[in-house]
Image (cartoon, rainbow, N blue to C red; front, side):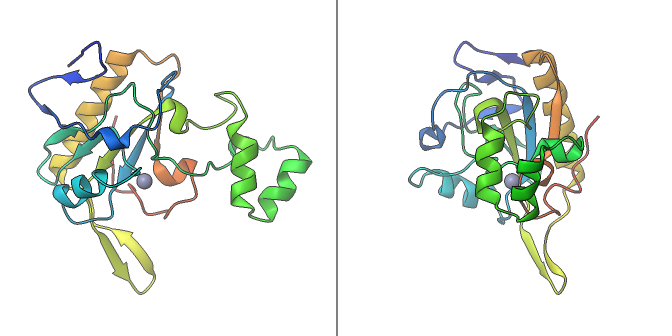
Length: 196
Ligand SMILES: [Zn+2]
């Protein structure tokens, strides 16, 4: 796996499929990878959403059969993370003023405080992370909405992508998360994703 000067992976296993509408600025640094599931049934359903105005989306998409598409350059800042969870909660180091916001679940205000912090005092966010989407539909269950489990081919491709990106980008600190670990999302998203 190699990376060209414009931030596109050069590898026979990765199909370059640019969706320019995904770009919402330039990524200044890369500190992490966020793993997502699309919550929609097919590659094309996601591609269609990427053609819309100012869409959310990720840099890579892994189809059910394990095929990998690069939908955005890794130099593009995208909208894929959403409102950040406070990292200080994990480390039990939140100041009292922040704890008040968190206790009230004022998600937008928590995010405003969080996004001002420098990495790694906060989780990676849109400004400094690569997103990988996995094609998996939602399943509506009595207990709530979950996701189709990832296929073995998808997990093999994810593992390969993460290993390749880690080697390629030489992260100073390698941080890889499932989406709900860093943001206020369905806790089941990417729960069946595995990597080394
Ligand atoms: Zn997600």
